[in-house]
Image 1 (tube, rainbow, N blue to C red):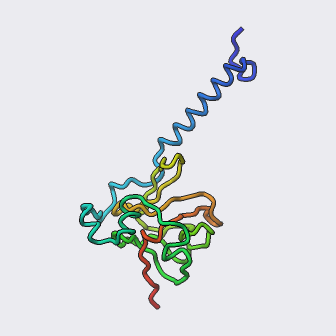
Image 2: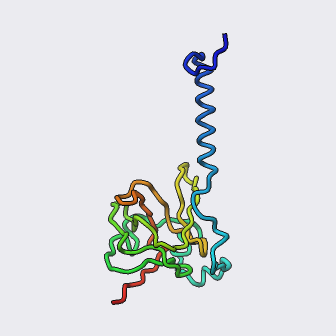
Length: 173
């Protein structure tokens, strides 16, 4: 006798049903864009690879343009405590405030939030066998780092950002 009740299905049918349901939910999660599109940003900055190479140091180019990562505890800003704003090293867009910076223990500068009108985009990242959220500058497509949901209150978010992708602008008094 066939029954639509999940609990009365045979073990094989229940397992197949639950696997299908899991795949359906996982597929829906992975297909939803993380945040902003990179195309509709005013004042877009687009340069050729050669132009970026001429403007950036080799480390900045590797991290920001080739989606690299600096080793933890080596970047200029991971243990940096001055007040000011952190901007994109490629285009100068202001992204993060020192007021939102915290020591995550990760070895990279970490922030709980972005500036209110910061041109930030988020994109699913499937590299290295993981599913993460990549953080990019939406103005120039620079790779900044990754976003995690293990940060402190009030947001619970941790923007884990490479120092090589940032330029610090000191607060003027």
